[in-house]
Amino acid sequence: MKQVEVTILGQGYILGCPEGGEALLESAVRMVDQEMSAIRDGGKVKARERIAVLAALNLAYRIAELPTPEPAGEESPLTSEDAQARVDGLVRTLDRVLQDDGQLI
Image (cartoon, rainbow, N blue to C red; front, side):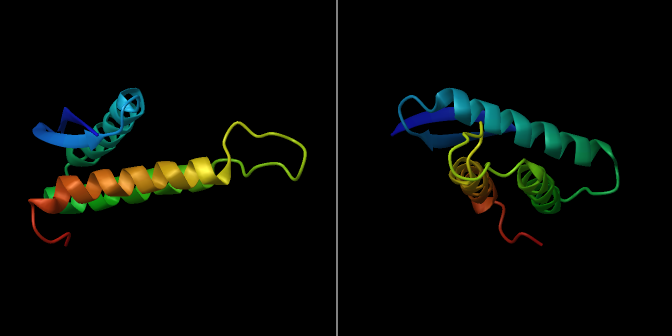
């Protein structure tokens, strides 16, 4: 497991990342940072924990909207296992990010 330093909402974090997973992690961090920044910049939510929860829900909703795999025989670019892995990765990232901030709400 490799250590990767990232920045989310202006705060630095060191995250564990499997070898070869850096690009996927950087992409996830970018999505989370963009989503959290948009919520913060909207001006109605100030607490970092609430921003993180709203961002996680928004991203999870988008993932849930992705087309489901075709029935047997036809390949889909994103399988349900891939979608679940992405959601799990985002949840793990949010858990690590919020770990030092205390309660979610």
